[in-house]
Amino acid sequence: MTEPLAQPRAIHHVRLTVTDIGRSKEFYRRLLGVDPVIDTSDQAGQPGVSEDPARYYGGCIFPVGDGLFGLRPVADAGDRFDSTRVGLDHVSLAVGSRADLVAAAGRLDAAGIEHGEVIDFADSGLSILSLQDPDDINLELVAPAS
Image (cartoon, rainbow, N blue to C red):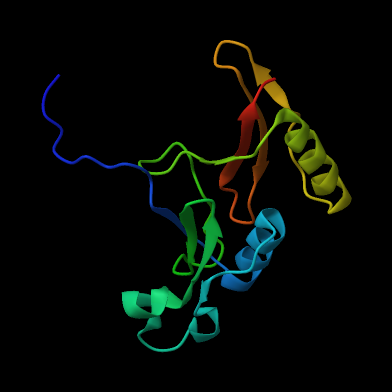
C-alpha cells in the first residue's frame, strides 16, 4: 500500500445542491428532527448570494452526529437529480438500530412520504430504509441488522 496523499479521519460535511431551499429545508428539518445551525436561506435569491461562500450560498447547514449536512440552493427550477451521472449516488445516514428504521418507516408513512421497505443485507450486517428527497436525491437510513 502506498502512502496516502491525505489522511482524513472522518467526513466533515456533505452539501447537496437543491432547487427550492424552503422546500428542502423543511423536508430535512422533518427528516433529521433538528433545525439548521446555520441558515442564510432568507438571503437566497439576493444578488451575489448564490456565489458567496461566506453567506453559505443562501443555504443552510444541519448538525448530524459529529458532522454537518448542508443545502445549497443553486440548481435550476425543474432540474432533477440523476444518480447515474458523475458525482453523488446517494446519501446514507446512520440510525441506532433496525427498530429505529421500522419506527422511521411508520413516521414517514404518517407524514405521507413515500419510501421503500426495510431491507436486511445479511452479508454486511446492515439494514436500510430508502427514500427520495424533494429533488429526487436517494437517501438511505442505515442501521445494524440485528
